[in-house]
Image (cartoon, rainbow, N blue to C red):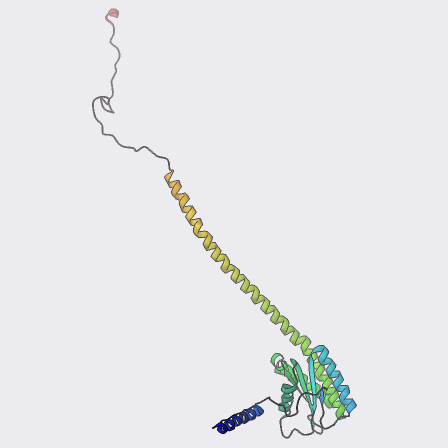
Length: 258
């Protein structure tokens, strides 16, 4: 029984190791990224030229964050150049601004320049195609393979530097401005909501005060005597009624004067 459990545990561990080994991206077939920015396993270029090109690319990477990596292979084994270049970019490049220069000696379309990272997400495909075609054309003018690689690396660095200045920085500035505008809008909206709540809270007691004052003023109105039309009647003290008129004539003449 114990032996069965041991065998089962070994089987589970073996299956787990196989799954991990077959998981995508676990181990790149060319190993970890080398210290140089030029990967030339077959020694196509002279070591001093490899170091010279690599030193310039490493300096740009360290100072500006632009990662241009050169890959030199004898044979792509039928794989598409862009696919191979992106495989190296995913495995070895970590900077957001990156590109792979893939050179295969004897291939007329070589070197291939493949921007990767955030570049395809920010720069339009038309701008990428135009810039890559220009860089490839300038590199194709060189006769020697070493000069083709050097020119392609230099043109790619200049291309990425231009995009960082005119595209990435502008995009980041626009994004920051948009976030600032949205923040200000949200602040104004919150302020208006708070003001509305405070206004309603103040309006309710104010209406109560106005109502109380109105009630008190209603109780303080001046009193008026009622006007009643009294019935007319004779007799004291209303003898003759209200419309009695006394006719007073001339006094009679005295008999003495007659």
